[in-house]
Image (spheres, rainbow, N blue to C red):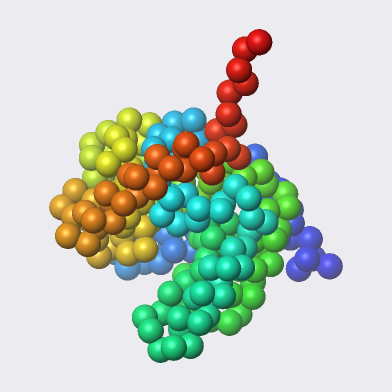
Amino acid sequence: MILILTPIVIALAYRFVPIPGTILMVERALQGMDVRRIPVPLTRISPYLVRSVIASEDAKFCSHNGFDWIAIQKAVKSNERGRRLRGGSTISQQTAKNVFLWPERSWLRKGLETGFTVLIETVWPKRRIMEAYLNVAEFGPGIFGAEAGALYHFGKPAKDLSPLEAARMAAILPSPGRWSPTNPSRRIARKSNAIVKGARMVRESGLSSCIYPPKKKSQ
């Protein structure tokens, strides 16, 4: 019973209080890295970055229940054909993994990730899931969260990121230790330009409505 109740209690607490840290942060510290993190509320993170990660990572974030089954099926088929391994993880799944679990891939971790994804989708609003994700995601070696990432790469707070800066931050998320948003490779430059267009589409099509509800028109 304790094993069941403990994760629920922790998840309920994390809905309201800042997440103190993650296993990956501890790993980076043990590797000798200078771990930097400045948790901030979603109101202090640029909407450009929020829409950029939706465009880049999970276009159905506002409409799914934690899992994008079509993306998962495509990932399975791609991996079965022997192509480069790809994932079908949503932002909710990545948040569950980053906040509660360890980064290495295994069937055990994937099973636990599924359970924690269902849990946070049940007890957290979408806005909190996005806020948690952007406060624990790694944006550089030992650089965690949008605020620390924006200050480290661009010398400005996350709320002041431009559309292109936000897109470049989102573009490096799969491999933040390998790619740079300030000195982008051709691949990252192309991806960033595509994310800028995608983020604009996310705004115009209402795909970020669970974070930024449309304003009611005055009568």
